[in-house]
Length: 424
Image (cartoon, rainbow, N blue to C red; front, side, top):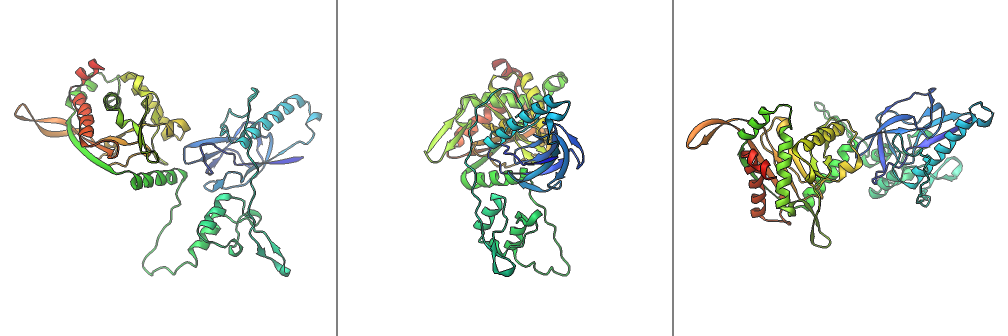
């Protein structure tokens, strides 16, 4: 019998680690080539990782909830060593060829490691990486000799190096004497201080989603000189239009349509800022990001090519991408392609927000709750559906006049939707 170990593959998009959300198989189970064996969470989404080998699961190398670096062992599968003696030798050979193709994909860094990828019979051209050279720190062992401590993950080595941690003084707790991230972080923290008598604390490790959000939001605050403006909008006509056609597009689809129309009129807001070349880079298409609050955190999948869609089509696509994002199934392209973000924080039960721009975008538009409020119409006090619209923009790409013009374009369409749609 031959045992083969499959390491966590390169999932593409520059991702270097993933958290094992759950195992889809157990030790002792029989698996086939391309069968999903684990769900892992990256900074982009939750994906299923398939096995490139067929046989019996011998070892699951990580517990659910643990984080693995790309290249660390994920699963070991035991297979018959003499496939040709089996009555199904042709299928076994086919599985072996598929597994080889799968591993070549992974080694090339294509990121095509989801179920259904990497086992195609179609010839492909791959680029190969140079094998990594692992740095070996030296640690003393019994008898005065030395041995290199086992540091498999480049992330762990970089963490130690950037924080001045001497790996020779770190006690390994990983399988086979491997130094883990937790070992280095423990060394960084030093001896734990005695807790105060009446206090306590609970530490919650950041997930892949939260790490990505932390990096992006921190960069946005550090780099973008943002400004926020807002306006109260009478959304009664839009509310009535939606109520008159309950099976039609949702309110968010109308808001998206009006936003797209305003971006056509003010294209400088559908752009990014190239700080190195001191240029504003306008996009020729509108990939409208929709902020989605899921169980694993905030993500912003994009409706691709929103500029060419009707209100009904926008409604369908918004429902599709938001459902996929909440389930952790949005594609990498959908999660990274946004050129402008629309945020309906009214769903969270709040009226206003000074949102953070989704770097490298230059603006974000948000809406609060549409609720009954006293409002003056034609000199008479009455009850209307009012929503607060807030707009945060990068002051490097425009001034307040442009921002106000964009907001009025959207607000006027909300207050007179039938006329606005007729002009679109």
